[in-house]
Structure formats: C-alpha cells, structure tokens
Length: 263
Image (cartoon, rainbow, N blue to C red; front, top):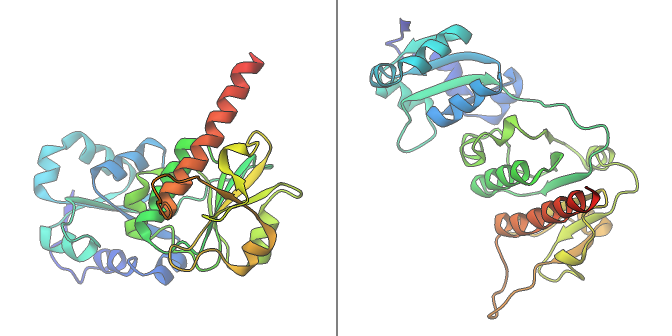
C-alpha cells in the first residue's frame, strides 16, 4: 500500500475535481465515501479506479484493505487529505473513485420512475433507494434533475446505483423515447384525479415525481394522468420522497399479489 502525503498529488487532485458534475461526466467517474458504499460496490463488481484509506481504517479493517488492493490502487492518506476529497462535514475514513455504473436498460420496462426536476439530493437518493427496493426497472432523470452521481445522492441511495439502471436524459425527446410506447404515464400530484391504489400497477406503466419547489414540468403535465395519495387530518401533502415510496410500494404489493394468485 502506497502513501500519499501531498494534496497536490494527481490522484488526489482528480478525486477533488470529481466533486463537480462536469468533471464526473468528463471522466465517467464518481466518488464513494464510507465503508458501507465501498463494500457495496465491491460486492457487485464495480470498476474501481483508486481508493484512499486512513491508517486507522486500514488497521481496523485489514480484510477490506486487502480486497481493495486486489482490485485497484489503494493509497494511505491522512484525515486532512480525506477531508479535501470528501463532500461531507464529517469525512469518512475511506473513499473510492469508481466508474459511474451504467446498468443496461431493460428491453421493455414494466415499471419506470421519472424524476422530473427533483433537486434535493437527499430526496433523489431516497427515491433511488426506494426504486431499487420496490423493483423499479429503470429510473430516468429528466431535464432539471439533480445529478444522480452527486456525492449526497450516492450516500442517500445506499448502493441503489448498482442495483437499478439510471439514466440522465438531457431533453424531453430522450425521456419519451426511453418509455415503452403506449404505456400509461402517471404523475403524483396532491390534486390527482385518480387515487394511487386504484391504478392497476400490474400493467406496464411509468410514475413521474415532480420538483419539490415548482412541481412537475409543463411537458409532464401535458402527457400524464395524475394520481394522488389521500391525506388525513388536513395534511397538505407528503414530500416527494414520501409520496414516491407510498406509490412504488403499492405497485410492488399489487405485483406480488398477482404472482401469488398465479401460483
């Protein structure tokens, strides 16, 4: 294991540049922070570029350090250098630079999730994690959405990037082209005309979730039917991550029941 002592080392400088979206896209790389995310990436065979670890973590987790040395260049660095790489207030003791996962899209997605201008990294990451858990076939990031490979999104998603195909789409033509022709398209809305549990989610379909501040785009409102989650106690609405979880797990429940009935 080599040691890097200078923040001006090319590997450190690259890792720092990857905090910017343009640099991530240019290099096809992103940074994972923390043992949990790094172990997740190892378990699914992610392509590792480099990894940085503190002396304390290397001693505390020798098996992890040995496995990382087998798949990439592992560097021993000080907490101060990890702090420069990290996007968190309290940096983790390990960080890895990996190729941005690009899982193949399904030939015919039975359930798609569209993030329509979702800007909050925590909400976006939670929705990706929920999508993976609920069996969503693909997640499409429409124009105006936060970068799904932002460090905060990666941490909130807890490894979902390695379990569900995600695509960043730069224009609406690309969004519509990624959806199977003729599938119903639903938009979550507090004023929705259909209750979310009255939709037949066994039919191939897509669910869109709009911006936290501005709501859905005009492009989405023109195309989608609206679905609502009924509220009690005069509650105005759920946040986008909460609404997405309720609807996606209703879809998962219906599909699970359909499989049981078919047995």
